[in-house]
Image (tube, rainbow, N blue to C red; front, side, top):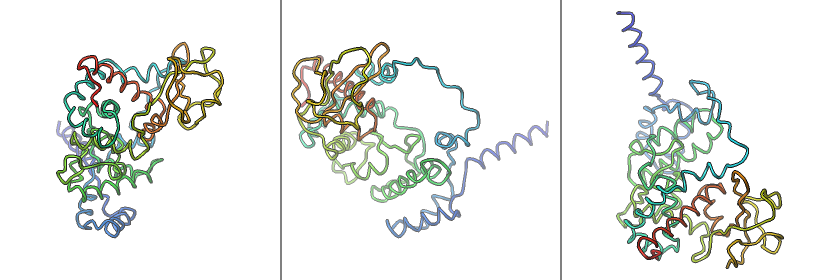
Length: 341
């Protein structure tokens, strides 16, 4: 019995040793601290104390480096050849998310109206972003951001340089916005707040909309305005359309290259036309293909569609935002009799 107890104690101690890690004496961390002191005027003593007790994020690291997986990855599901969009959009554009989006927009309608007047971004698109990123604030992430970014910034993985850059921005922000970096929770990659901004995006696009002297994207008013500011600074065109579905011959599209990276004048795209009549947009378009179970759905994406892909570099993501926004708008108007402009 004593031997079993001793083994249990040793096991607990070994686990705690693995979890708690001192990074302060590592040479690469010392170089990083020197940089933060010289470039951003952070206090060396505070930085050393932060790095002295880091909760090592093994599970997070395993996402970016398979060597850290404690158990072999289970074989992935064998999805059918087609239907990728059906699977992707099932939860993101579902009825519950639409319903909660309508109520979120209604609850904060005063802020949305002010933000629209200043930035020109429709409330339903901001709502859709917050709905997808944090489920309207209910799921902002449970991971300690400092520990995540330190682990990913200094342990071997394919994106180590990027995460170290984000750690730099995060620590700079902690000084600017006067928060304790140890107290912030976020995603497994270090994204923060209702809109899930990475620290570099936080620094570049977050705004103090409620004028309390701090840019806090954990605060509803600042978060809503910050998403709008992100769109505006990336080229959002007020009053212009986002996307429209188009028709083509056949069930599977194999014509021009599709995706947000490829743009065309509509005159170039022979045999393709809007399904719902004339489309009042004269700029270049992207062809967006959605893989459905029995056919490909094809869309024109306008400039504002491309702007959404600056938030997340995925055509599917941008289309989910667009479709969720349109459903929220339609249901809001049906329930409350206005478009909230």
